[in-house]
Image: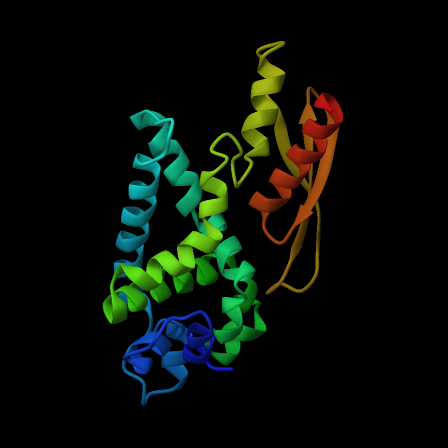
Length: 226
């Protein structure tokens, strides 16, 4: 199935199929296919602005209303890289992504940054092709459920939650240490321990140090709090 067929099945008509398809073209693909002149970066710029406007409008209209600080915080959670990657995977959009051979081999199709950029580029293309109606179609499905529960964050920052929990009882600071790295150099997996004064609170694994630290913090937090 092509992306325009996917969109047509959702009731979104593609006026300019080339523009829509461009949203899924990563720069690595253009580098290997010289006949192509454009990747999705310009569309990503437009999509970011459209996404911010759509989310801001929906947050502004919530009842009961949120104050400016809460709207700003909530919007940041809804449009962060990890959240956008979640939406794209939910819609299975990364299957339409066009990557160069090298990027494909190193796991680019599952990389949050690439998937999030692709999602924003698609929004930019849809806006340029059909205005806000197709944007509303897509974002209502993936974001609206979260707007119904503003007290429940999409992405939980367990490192911050763990530090706040520890500091509620003392002024001590937790530390993180990579204890093992496995896998090939282009696709490593990190294992991290989180410690408090030399005592191991939890461990976690991830394909980046950042994700492994979050997993370790989550492991520690859930053991200490739940």
